[in-house]
Length: 388
Figure (cartoon, rainbow, N blue to C red):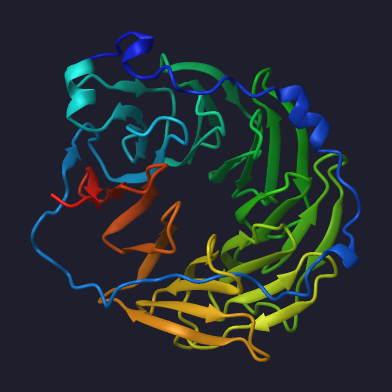
């Protein structure tokens, strides 16, 4: 496989400048949750999905990346460059590569190989400006890469067990991860300095994120914990814990935060998604409709449609929920032939895409025209929504 080429082969002139880490640090000065400014849990959104997906035998992809030698379990699409993607797999490698004929003509099919992990690269994320990529491994390490060159700029160590997920602060510069050692960690990417260690869960921190306004950190605990916690990124203190009745009865698996930062939706092994007011911790909706005790693997608030949320689970159902009703209920159901493990939203349109057990991860191009999916067949495939 061809090695790395010059910077111009991977980064286009339109890409924005690097975001300032100092500004992000200043923005992390959170305040106590304000009940008056928080919604009481009526959440947004909805999605349009098609009829039940059939297990088609034909390959509809426009490009297949075969650089990995084992399953591809994490994928990401650059928010700033429409043809730039990254993939990570069980071969302990990550790659940065470009999609499309124009990219192939410019690079000759070259890719950037990102080595250094000693176990599966199970999570990854581009920074908001697209200049950096963070990868998380089951080896407990987080690495930050310069996208233009593929150079590792920082190795962030601290977690004593596998890294479950990786997120960037919405304005860039700060990396947040959850780990299987019951902790979450936050670093300044530029220097590698550890800013906070969030300790308090009694199980793996299987899901989490910054709130979209960047002022809070929200984490979810898996088996043995079953709690949602809200943390101050400035002090590292836990401002809110949601646990016990009427919250989940089994470990969390996934969560999403409303675009206005007022509420979270979480999925669990108990099969009942919950909507929580992040101001006061009140469970404002328990969304019954999935098969009993069928694990919920993905949840989201719609980015486009008010008062609508989505959940997907091992029962093969994608369910769209109307949260504006007096009693939140089902708006639509899409039955899949197998368990659904991923969902991702079209960036500019009210559409949702799902991945089943035979796929590992999903990501969309900034305009939503292309999608990438990782799989256990050692490949990553790119699909186009454009008409021929």
